[in-house]
Amino acid sequence: MQNDAGEFVDLYVPRKCSASNRIIGAKDHASIQMNVAEVDKVTGRFNGQFKTYAICGAIRRMVSVLGLAHLGGL
Image (cartoon, rainbow, N blue to C red; front, side, top):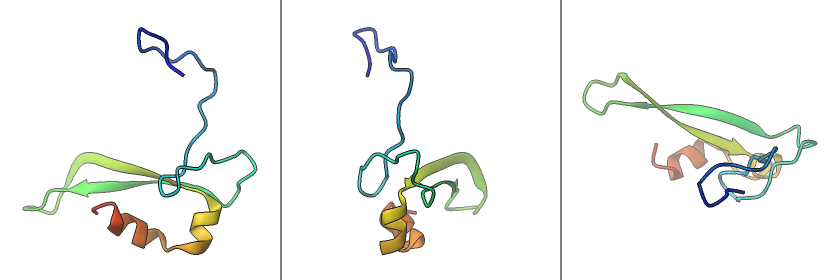
């Protein structure tokens, strides 16, 4: 949670699944977090930026991770 000044006041901010927006619990050992590099469309080189995906275990069992990246525009 944030206060009026925009500062975080919670000690713990849980991760949320990028696909289902569910909270990823501490006991979800099948969850992953991955950084996918963004590349320049002309040169094909890494431009220093990346997108971070946090996927919970239930979504990993249902869907391909590459399919989620494809839906994300990569």
